[in-house]
Image (cartoon, rainbow, N blue to C red):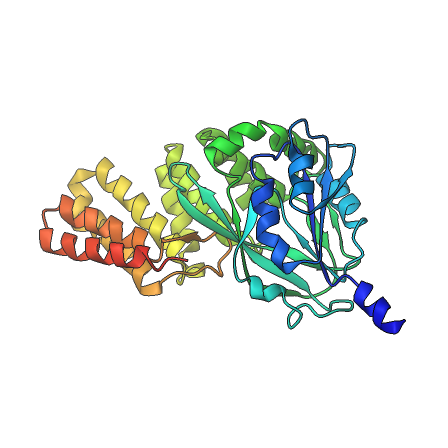
Length: 361
């Protein structure tokens, strides 16, 4: 009898919420199936074949009336799980690498003693932020941990966070998929912001929404508010600073972007993302002030992108974009030297860019 009861225990379950995700939900479930004992999908009102595809992939599907509250939906989905551990994914995500972190050596049966953070690798195609952005988010939750927050909800737990070598692919921030989702997230964020106008994390998230949709003035304003309100030790500070510099430049506020870079440089001496954007800022400054370009500005561009390569990739930094410490910096240097007529150096960095492209995680 004891063996039967032990066998009945669910160690790890996949828990999802979904709506009109027939495009991608099969990919998510197929990627997770080999590593979980149960797959739970909470459908919040699909009008396409989401439910049927999920069941065909082996998931159990439950219905939930959408209430404009992501935390409420997450918690309702978690309530269907009897697992010791819950892997929380969205339908525009999939397990890309590091699935061994989901094994019993890392996540044993019984109540867990930590909150597992995973690396979300988000495909981005917006000007100035192209590439694969990376963020660390708690997605491997021990039983009993739930969510709070109407939008960009967060797990609520006093447990320590442990970074796991699990990489989750995500394509929800591509232009095509953002258009498909419409303004849902913006509407919910604005409601939250009305209730908590001094919350810097909400300002950051609404800024990212504007930036992804190419609204430079709105993005720059919201990033500036987030910077004004955010504590210096905020876990998202790196992403905030780098994105804000990009947004200010896009809005034509180059002097402010350069001032922000000067103010933050001592905090990000080992960030390829920071120096990648610094190089871009000073290249724009050189274009605006050609009289100062060769003597003052272009040497800073060259130095910044070379520093990216010396630092190398830093996927541990929140908001890091893969390639800025590798092939993207080398490519920029190749174009830089080609423009200056330095063909030998241009060719050298072109070869390096090609080599590094194959090694970028």
